[in-house]
Every structure is written in C-alpha cells, then in structure tokens.
Length: 171
Image (cartoon, rainbow, N blue to C red):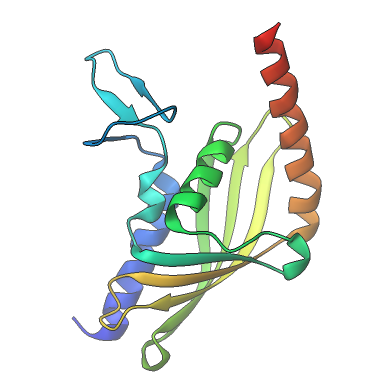
C-alpha cells in the first residue's frame, strides 16, 4: 500500500474508533475505571477504540486556544472521552471531507459528531489536522478545531448535570 493509502486507511480506523464505544478486556489490574461483567471478567470501560489509530506518544490538542484545553496524552484524552461517553449516547462521527497530503505526512478531516444527552442534543463540528508516522499507519498528533460556540454552551450543562447526579447518589 502507498503512503497515501495507508493514511486514508488510518483516518478510517480513527473515525471507526469514535463510532465504536467498545469495552475491551484488560489484561492489567484496573483501579476505579472498570467493572466486573457477569462472567467475572474485569473490563476497562475507557473507550479504547478512539486510541487504536494513535501512536503510543500521540498528542491531542483541542483548539482554538480560547477553549483553554491543555494538550493531552492518549490516556488523558481517553479519560476525558470516557466521561463524555457516560453522558452522550448514540455518538456518531460523520466525515464530511478529507484532504490527504502524504508528502507532509498530514491529513485534514472535516467531520460532524452527533448524539443524544440528558442536557440536549449533541451536534458538534470538527476540523482535525492529523499528523502521521513515517509509514502512515499511526497518528502522532491531532489538532482538533471544534465548534467553540456549541462546546462553550454544552460542556457547562454537562458538568452541572454530572454534579447534580453525583450529589443525588451521595444522598
């Protein structure tokens, strides 16, 4: 496969990972992150599908800078997305346009993310600049530009909802 084909395939794996919402069996002990299934197997409920296309040292930046979100490692991003998964259901990422540049080891993906939540519909738009490793099989950096107006309104509602439900659980 050519470098360009590898990059396109990796982008598809990246999108598929967001659409999976899978739980995978963990071979390592899990502290406060998983649950025991009916078979007694400890599973890790972090969404590993979103990490499948990423290199081990991939960095994820959320932009614009006015969002005040620090860059995150795979583990940090999986933790964030896992919390979002608890509130947003039926998430689907729909690619709208892909511009692939094998010479620069980069691609730009324009996509829409939709889902349902107790605080209203989730409908965000993204432009992601993806940087790949030398053979195009892993993403080494993600620069995610998102709809800051939607996110600035949605995230506080989610935080409020989660806080209220955590307090109800303590009562």
